[in-house]
Image 1 (tube, rainbow, N blue to C red):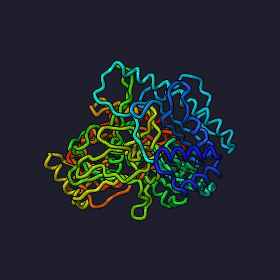
Image 2: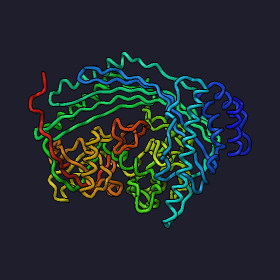
Image 3: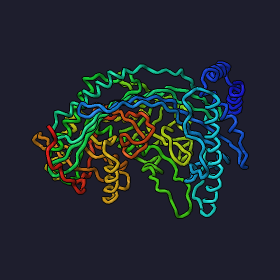
Image 4: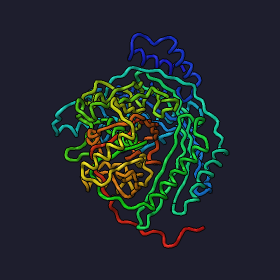
Length: 591
């Protein structure tokens, strides 16, 4: 025990003179004395810090562990599947060799290990310190061998190329101590099982729906993080959600789907059954209405994003592009197929109208009494996040950073939110606030929309009230979207499909249409916003790093919230989502 405490105290003293505060030191000692996971992590990381057996010394090391228990239940048309329970402790070690100016990360080889793997990637569930240390020893041993091999391959790959700009590989950060007492709330599994059964039965009243389902999942536990600079963290890790999805086919065979979800960082603050039933009913009505709606036509003109659609658009387009990372080092002539941010190199340039700002604030817990999903205390790099003005008066002032240096920024800002490849983390938003200093009523925006459409010679305008973000489609749906985006000049990053698209006519009529997709929808189109509403809408979602935050993808999720007003675009392009249509079922569904 003394060894583990000494390792952390020495690291903090070396990284942040003067000596650690006695109260902080006592808190660390108490945590190590009572938490076997934390103790095992500290002792093995302390040993790994001194590794240099292969000729390269470790200059920085970190270990992350998630200690999680989950319960999930799914149902279809009032019938339950078997409940799923799981307990798991995944471990993510990282050792850096070389120097901060040039190390083993940021290369296509950074995560590549060609030897025999003896570690399982998880810690045992029993709190026996010798067993925990054994698992961590194997994980850190592989991390060191991987780092040593990657450093050599990265250096070799760069010998034959000329770099236009050389940036260091690692930013310094101040050590942080955040120790929360782990606690788990009681989940009434029987009550949630019956609730999910009843919610799924809502779809039984809609015979045109071909497939449907409702899922509930809760995961709770603690997240641990230690590094050799002296940062030590043990924080709550909880999230619960209810997800509903339905799909149908139009008479011509077009596949249509919709979905929705409700999330909470506190399982005890999930909505009641009546509110959840409203969500499921809305999904069912949307899919049934879409199946009976006419096909949309190609359209270029003004588009109004109402309700949560505007927040979804900002979440998709800016949620991913505000996080700028560098392209990994690879062998000359064999570039890795990595999508770069549309905002890379655009610091100081206009990305929104002059009267709009973007602010990301992970420290805000609530808005108007409603919890925000993007609150967190520490990112995956062990950095405290801070409130960040990303866009001011339409100009891009900052981007989301990890501890990998990027051009134009001077340090990490605590936005490492998802595990990533190449020895790095993925930056993502937390609570993103879209602020408009010039606003007007939604009625005035609708009037201006119709005026712009008439001026452009259109007989109608387009109103979008919901996008498929996060996407509730399948992996194949996502693949087709990406292919269509590439063929139509929209790049390889697919845009979310509009779910609720209406033709708005001058006489006040609205008509729901189906089968349209946004063409070339990215950050550049947001400079064409001409108006914003005077009401703001909060949209919560779980990001998993997949394109369009595909629901159910990925093994690690983080909560995000976007608060935005409705916005009016002067011009957007929509086109039919061309694809071969499958034939509808030969016989009607069973009664």
